[in-house]
Amino acid sequence: MLPHEIVGAGVTGISAIVYYTTGTPVFITYFSINFFLLIISVLTVGWKFSIRSIYGVLVLTFFLSVVPEVPIGTFVTENDGFLACVLGGICWGIGYGIAFLNHGSTGGTTIIAKIINKYSNITLGRAILYCDVLIIGSSYFIVAGAGIEKVVYGLVTLGITTYVVDLVVSGVRQSVQFFIFTKKCGQIADRINVEIGRGVTVMNATGWYSKEPITVISVIALKSDSTNIFQIVREIDPGALISQSEVIGVYGKDFDSIHKTAKKLNKKSIKNKLSNLTNVNQQCK
Image (cartoon, rainbow, N blue to C red):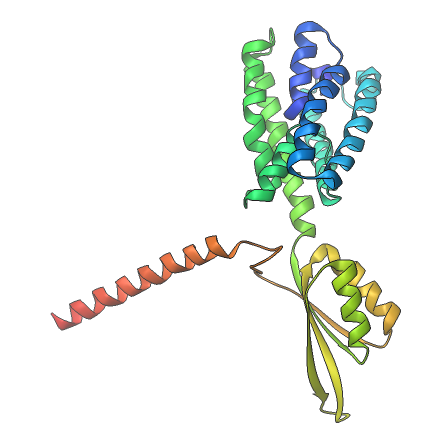
């Protein structure tokens, strides 16, 4: 993106603008701004996220000092700016998504997006979108000769990045429900509680064919937890029967907020009641 003078999002976008106007290397501006953002991250999000963000910032700083030196014709031709913004957006989105799934970031507005996502239901990709449109749009007024074409390229890159981030993160965060039929429910339930951090409900049941009692474990978790849950069951009881199904909606702790859903349901219920009252009044008349 840099050789094509495409301004991206976040701190890298700001760094690119500084690079186009003053010639200051991107990695210097990027690291300087993120130094202060990481202090805010430690105070708001916590050390676990911040330590991984520090690692991401250091690694990206290194690559920002190396990758711009790669000849422009290695991947994209010099005049093919559209292909450059498409490939840049895809790679950017995948990188953001992987970082978020591992509770870290590459710094910049991803830190701000993580804070917004922590305290609201705004998706990570959309939070990045809100934070970064202004940065890309400002390049039209700051970068000499940028023109509307470069701004559009930057917005296209941002749109692709937003979509890919949500695709990577939301695809893994889909909720699933497990029914685990086993005689070793205590060991499995304890490990799911401790290692996965998910609630477990144990129910007593009877196998109608064998007429023998058996316990059933019910677990609602994220799709990303599935592999670990399967591994725990396989290690403790290889003969256990496991049923996994996708869940349309899960509301409560660590899942979707029940408040906004309740508001929507209440509005729908009120509309239905008003509609029924209207019908009754018409019949009475």
